[in-house]
Image (tube, rainbow, N blue to C red; front, side):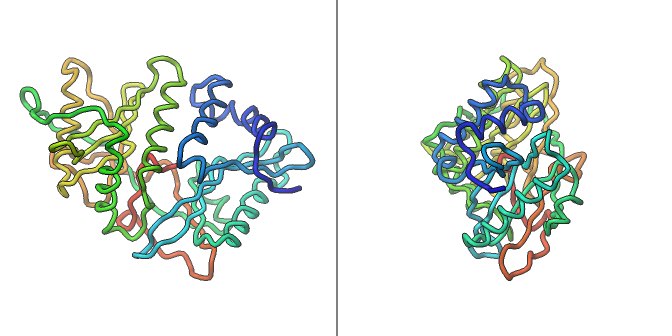
Length: 318
């Protein structure tokens, strides 16, 4: 059994087996197109691929591999992301998924990665057996205050030309936190494209990716990226040159005012610790539904991190 890059027929085996679980409402053809389109982005070409544990030409288990640059306690670190760990149904219970993770970790260690990162959908116990530690992260719902009359803030659709400004906004916002990804314009674009493609390839009207900015002169100074689905919004990421976040709050007021007769959507978000726009109130704070888990790959132990120590947007959950 060998762990190899998954391409061609191997990817087809993986997609066919995982489709019933992770199809996100797509058809089988659209599910494959969504994967190929992610690889076609600038960030995806350089930093994303699938790996497969194979016996001959048969896939036993597989995972996605992500290469991230990050900052921990002021120094640059390399983070190996492990996602979509999946065992083919007919060979489950034989330790193949464990072998995939262990071989990915060992490869990452040889390649000089400092940490491995994953998000568990099955609780922490399984991955704790593989040396990963759960990091407590939080999410909440947002209540946005009503603004009488039409909001005065000018808001327009975001474009690729705004990405350098978004990168600068994010860099300033992340600086106080002990751990965060280095979110260059390619990674920001990848996150937006991934969600936009999912909406576009899915059933008509089921999802919508909304990307809006507020600008001064010709430069974006605040932005919001959200997914609208089934009457609810998920804030994928947002940012504001104003440390108070007042312009993000104003953008949300504008978006809600577009259809005053419509019911208020539930708004879910992972906002940075200690940062809440003045027009917004956090309610129903709770542990994040995706469990963040990390493992040190070098001699340095994993530091203790909590919600106040890290900045991690929903757009970057994999």
